[in-house]
Length: 461
Image (cartoon, rainbow, N blue to C red; front, side, top):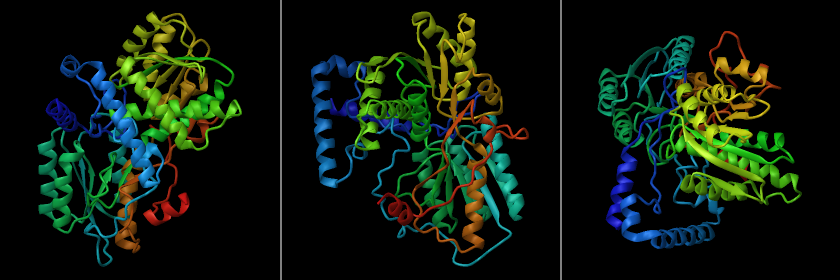
């Protein structure tokens, strides 16, 4: 049986495609799929047949005991010691490991007139187009030459693209990997050739010799939206449905998990029984999300919250429409549609209207990410209640900005975290104008600062 679990874990880890934003097709922005990590208590049909639910429950109990023991030993909150983290992408332990001793091929002298290689795992959406355009504009600003490639979803092609960049002698590589695990060898090869690498769109393990990887924080994108919803639905029962691109997809699970956490965190404050820490809210929400994942629904009298159905919308408008239509037929009295990204939210709005209901009155639509140009009108009209800030321009320009700081301003990048989070926030009917630029296809960039591990530790102490 342990062999079966090991095989299942290996299979899931290998089934990955990295995505920086949400979905594909029908105006959706592609989510670069991060490597999914299988839980030890994941039960396949074969496993259930062999072991039965008692064994699965025993495994879950063992995992819980192990996590509690690990938390006590490390001094960290239990949420940071959980071994099953598929729905916790972006929730990083404050106990950062020092990375200053990792060779990252950082330059030893100043240099300008650089040639930058940008390796894209895929380019199948407007989100990625905006990201590449922003990268080119940043290179133009600094007088750099940009050479970019598109692997079109093929892992082997992307490795060959990186190898070609190494052979041609680019000065630095920006890597948006199709498969995080497979691309680790590409990063190592570049560093051994004396070429530094910055990731974008996904995060690497701390031991991989990237300078850092720049990405939207999926969990906290959902958290920000959830905190907003907790205020919006104050003293009201929430009867919701959850719409993910795909259950099991780490980005989508993390966004919805974070959304649940934000809701219950605010509800605890409103009842006068606030959580002792945000981490306590994260942990309780994670248990609730596990119930949703396992049963397809969850119900909490404590938080006056139900999620009565979940659907998979393939990160697209059409997928969101089809999934929402099915949900509304079975549950016409829901008052909230929780969507992991905007395109599926757009589909949900169409489905709500098609059922003779009014979005923003009968059913509210909340999204965890994106902020594409077409969304601002929906926010202004009240058809969409909220979405999360997710800017492709920052994914494209920020790596080039960092390269400039390193090569031309002597910026010390030896101990940056493996993942550098881009700004998060809520875009609503009340504040959408703060994020809107009529000349941009997505929400406008927000300034942010690259911080070392020492700085981050100091801020959290």
